[in-house]
Image 1 (tube, rainbow, N blue to C red):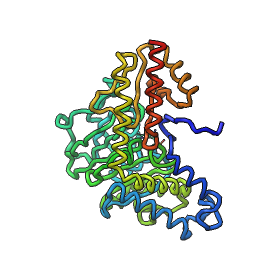
Image 2: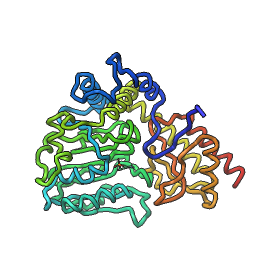
Image 3: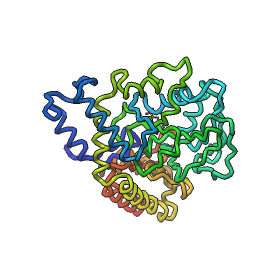
Image 4: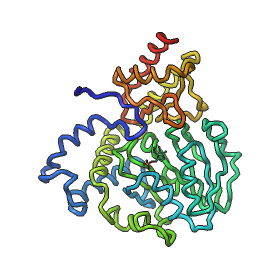
Length: 364
Ligand code: PMP
């Protein structure tokens, strides 16, 4: 059919309808250039205007100061699991990790190869349902930085505030892949933020790194040129051929977020959607359950299980028939997961909640 669905996928994920329409209208002939963005030289003035506008709109959205470089890279957040320690550490430097889910765990395991990384807190024994209290965290004063995953996409655990890094350099590093641009963030509290684009801000293939400029330029000698922040910063993300079309799409999303009134407005919508869905779960008398501690429930990824777990498959199947797709939980945890990123309209969450009530009435 020609109708759009409500896509609850964790990433690649739903994009704003008006962004897709705009890209469609500009696809064949971008603004009179006689070619599509996919065909342009990355060094031509047209593409340069696209990447510069994308960067400047992102700087406006997140209020990023000139102390920070903004890089548009490739390789996904997974590549940053290695690039961050390679750029910020020597092999003998210690790094602290707070692990609140499986992405933080993956970041830790990759960093082990390039520095002395240590897990100072892990939520694994409690099935990743919590964020630790920051006061009780025993940090290594000699650590080069403290690493967190701001939103665990699989487990649905989201930091609502951030720990103060108690290492000498005072550095906090965050993987913000799955809640990037979902709410205002004070970038000044971070040494480095990284995010894959394919959840909130664009297609896969673009990875955004926001890094304090004074941290650039000390990469380990073995660092591949493609992972060296200095190379990319010195060349305005145009050292080699960047993911041009993806960057263009991110730019359209940034424009759209600004047109919505910026991240303060975006967050208001996300709070409304998240509350509606968590209320439906909590008011179901146990038919639906979310294991995550209430104070750290993610506004982006809402995992839940059914009391009668044998009904989960039926739930996903019936929802799909009503054009609500990709509700199956991650293969590692099972259950249901509804990802409700920025671009998920309120109507999508309303429809899901109505479906959940109806499903319970029929199967409860
Ligand atoms: N970190 C988080 C929080 C993620 O959600 C993901 C992807 N789901 C990754 C890292 C890995 O991202 P990529 O697939 O872009 O390498």
